[in-house]
View 1 (tube, rainbow, N blue to C red):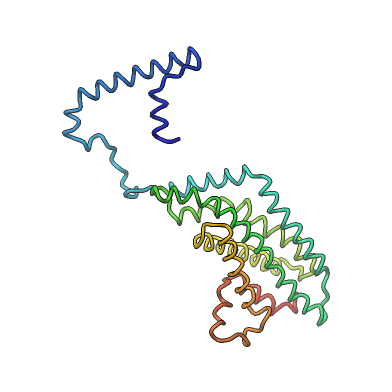
View 2: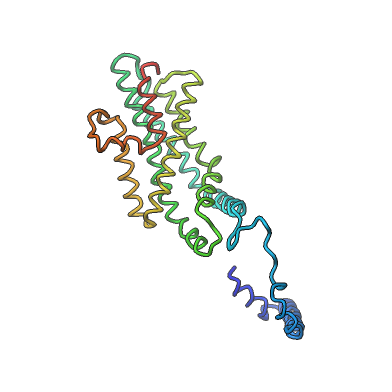
Length: 283
């Protein structure tokens, strides 16, 4: 509630019922009496104005809110917002199931011959498209949520580290972990990759890393442009450039020297997928 509106409510007479009017008149008399007492002691109070203000705690930040307090409040708020959108959560999981079934159907039970090995490279290559869907979704959600953060940040009550960390903490068990796990559990075994826990664990870890790379890239794009049209365009541009230069479409040795640095821009997920592709003969 706005502080000014709160003060108006305290001093207003509620005439909606006799009981409410009687209660508000009693509160108004208390305020009037308190104001008279305050006026009588005004001279002595002005001599020691520092006594009117509470002393800040030693571990509090000057002119702001403690980081732990910011993180706690924004994490709770983000969790409530996510839980109050069950259709959004269900949509995220459902799209993972649908994409896993479609991709798994296309690459269903690949063989171990030369053609199968080439197809397995493509299967690993296509798996990263799952993170692209989360990239677009996170860009849209951030363009909505960032408005409230901008107001709080301008008021000095919210910081960037707490805002970014609170989103990932609140969504870890709701989205960040379930979505890659659902996709990997369906797609991995439909394709027919190696059926040992270690290999599946590597694939799952790559999917989680790819997911976090996508949501991190979304934060960067929204930081550059608050408008969804512009930020989504930046996200598509960055994702496409990194995707093409990671060594899947064109061999890294054939990329010009001044563009080779782009293969590192995608981060950990692309590199892990590259390692899996190099050893795909054993999958």
